[in-house]
Length: 313
Image (cartoon, rainbow, N blue to C red; front, side):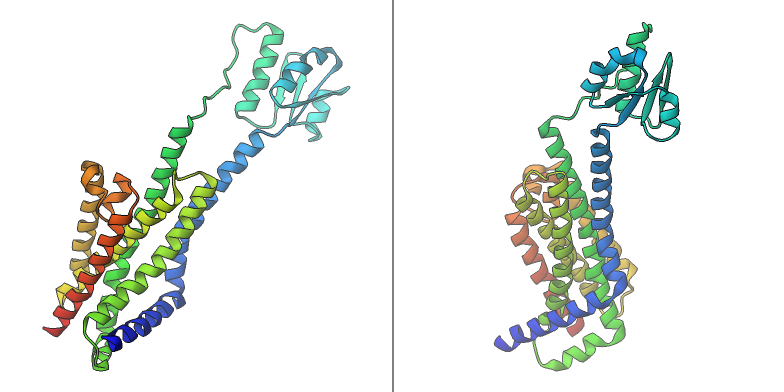
């Protein structure tokens, strides 16, 4: 047994190095993190810009508008020619008589227009106020984003688990490893561990970024559920390809594993009280993720055993 565990550690490290040396693997895993983080950062930048205090050029006859403009977080500046200041780029907006000049649209632009319309006695004015979501609603949105990211990486896990077995079978690596004199479950388990570790590392980075920018309602639970989903999904891919045997094609076992993973996702929505105990289902059902993590490890053990039986047959 000691020899098997030693071989498991060595083979796992070898598979990890192989995965991380492949540029397409690293790029595909980094893409969801970069896309999600970039989108949230861009959203924050837009919000920050909207909360800035842009310059509004006004003329002496409109000085009475200064308190109202300051109340909506703009910076009114009295100039001789408001239109000229706007044309020169010195002002974000300009008020000249009955005319309003704006360099951008948005909530603040509507607020300035409303002030001008009130001052001129217009029959209507736009309403720029958009109610912000309550804190519980925002936290729920963060949970959904976290579950979506974890779900994407779990589907990667199905592909990785099946792909690493199929590639090494076709390339003869599994056949060479069979001469090492260790139990056959070591070969499947080492591949499952390597693929899972890489995916869990990337999903942890992604969920930490989402929690910092948006909030997940509990980072530890989000990462635990995400890790459980990846362990379970990678095991499904490994087991499907392993059980299919050396003569199987790639598409059939992969499709079966993807269907099983999708069914588990759906179970979490349909039966959350039961789904919170299972990998992938817990992404939708919620919970601490500890039980799904344990079951995900059991899935991995079964995946290693299935590969051992198929290649021994």
